[in-house]
Amino acid sequence: MSEAKIALVTGANKGIGYEIAAGLGALGFSVGVGARDGQRRETAVAKLRAAGVDAFGVPLDVTDDASVTAAAALVEQRAGRLDALVNNAGVTGDRAQLPTTVDLAVVRAVVETNVLGVIRVTNAMLPLLRRSASPRIVNMSSGVGSLARQSAAEGELTTGPVAVAYSPSKTFLNAVTVQYVRELRGTNILINAACPGYVATDLNNFQGVRTPEQGAAIAIRLATLPDDGPTGGFFEDAGVVPW
Ligand SMILES: NC(=O)c1ccc[n+]([C@@H]2O[C@H](COP(=O)([O-])OP(=O)(O)OC[C@H]3O[C@@H](n4cnc5c(N)ncnc54)[C@H](OP(=O)(O)O)[C@@H]3O)[C@@H](O)[C@H]2O)c1
Image (cartoon, rainbow, N blue to C red; front, side, top):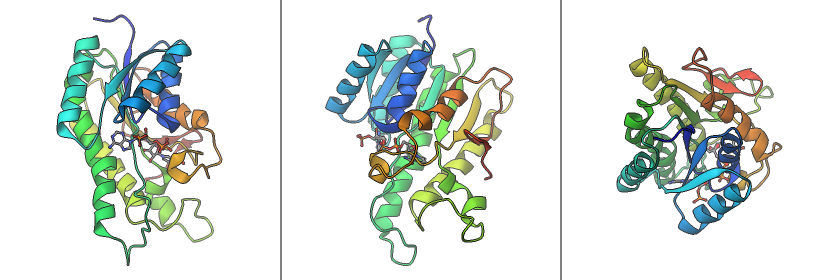
């Protein structure tokens, strides 16, 4: 079994996920770079290794059962356990998402990745997480998933456009996170949801105002919580995000 702590970051080939992998690597983690595209994955792994990170590629499409099962087998073979799982992979669904006109296929596709993907990956990795002395799960949510913020008076809203697929997918993910916390209460697994802020990445055509490195910070913090750290929370850099 490896001495270094082991992390797996989904969607780690670019954007915030890449910087989470880089940050955990800088803290001494051996980092599995979960990515669905072989070329993008290997490029990211090479870049991380050049920066001194003990990175390894993990072929991983979070919407595909066989891919996720194989990813768990790869991590098991490589490390025998998992200390931190960061469920970062996500999609917006791109196309117009006004509730009254939305194409249901867009809603389904976003939920498949942002919610079912997280459940699929988490359940596949749980046996490996249970072997860790200090397992952590971080679900990359968003402030747009906060019903408190979405339902605040117009003008106080800082939470993106009307979007019936993406925003509710993060609300759903938050609810899923809480259910995991309830089932796993009493174990040593700390599970939290994170909001990275509005970050310039492909996801928003680089319209965000924060750097991917800034966006990664909260996930890195939650992936490396001390044993008496919080579980079942929703956090951004500034503190607690209201559900
Ligand atoms: N950017 C923001 O302002 C912001 C704000 C709040 C929350 N977030 C959340 O932060 C997370 C990262 O977003 P980002 O801004 O870094 O976006 P990004 O640059 O578009 O990166 C998204 C990552 O997810 C991967 N991915 C998508 N579908 C996947 C699948 N089925 N299987 C495996 N990987 C998949 C992408 O891989 P490919 O390269 O193969 O597409 C990519 O690596 C997402 O969960 C997003 O919702 C972002």
